[in-house]
Image (cartoon, rainbow, N blue to C red; front, top):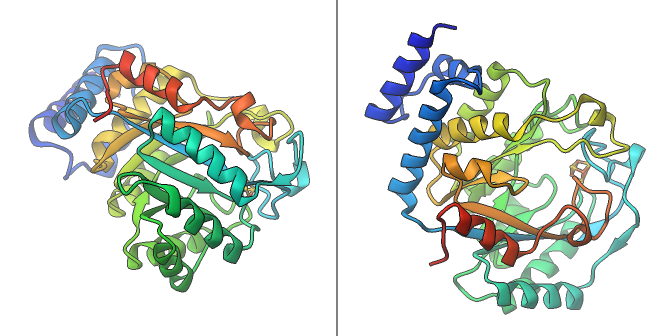
Length: 326
Ligand code: SF4
């Protein structure tokens, strides 16, 4: 790939913004080497976008996994897939437990609370968790649903139970590495948008096998959804999961993808990297996740004792990058 070609794309993106970024341009930049000068130009343009849009405002979101149970969708990257369940326990939280965890998170300071269930978790029951969470959350803390696929009826009920938004993704190689048809994910996203819930999106789970062309297509899809928050997440090779043998991309490679994602999707509120790390803060990441309970990327069913970090630690990492609470 000609250096001139990359440089001229970067020049265009810096001078004119990215609303007219083409699939070809996105693919070219995603394919660049992470050891050349253009890499730093890309990071600089992405950081400049974040600073122009977000100032120095950082955000910490917290996610509580409500249940750790075998899931029939069998995603090949998830520790809770039924055919390769690799978590160290099976359980469901109850509402008092969840409320106690929320109180602890509020003391540390969070901007949004995500409640996550496996795809098989009864959605009627999930609504009770959302309503209970909303009853103790301050108005300035958003409540976000991260549950299985749903129709417009359930999307409206999520909104009525106090949810402000939803985390819902058409994942990379959906229908190949998962048993869910991509069309089903798209239909859920349409229902959520029709119910006027905010969309929290992510390019995930990125592995070494995903090509720049695949990633570019997904970024254009993400852009069409106008998410308030965008993220890029590398796949964790969780022991026991079918995709673990494929390994993972480096933090440096992820930082490049974060920068392109931030510029192309242009989230209105914040840009995230997953899992939390410092390097992508140089590319304008201003939001991190604290996690507790079940986590598809962990074999500890209480991820706060494993891969998950708490909100206080998330704020510390953000501050190192020059991102601060309101
Ligand atoms: S990622 Fe979600 S849908 Fe897929 S197996 Fe895990 S819990 Fe189920």
